[in-house]
Image (cartoon, rainbow, N blue to C red; front, top):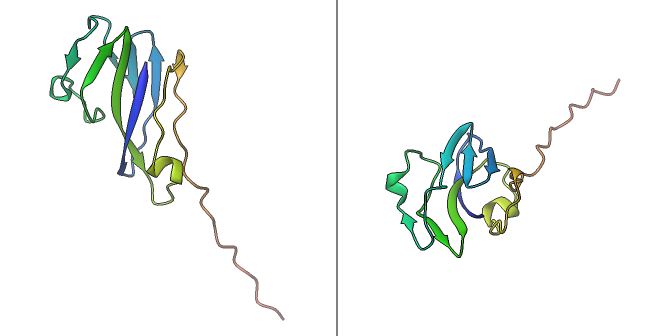
Length: 110
């Protein structure tokens, strides 16, 4: 399975898990096991706002494009994500934001 990420400024989060030919997105399972090689499933046929494009199956490999929500403190890796190629089973590691820097209040000097 290959996943392509389409960054979008949003305040929600994305969690994705691969389980065989299924993709679990924020707890909802999308089963692509019935797709045959060479088949394309349009995004409009998938009842989810997380899919940003069609799903293709070529050479036995699923290619999926998902929206990647990016926060105000987004990282370069989130803004310009690399494709996730040959994803193993389990939780999918997504690009992470920059740390939030908290200004430390200084006590007034006596």
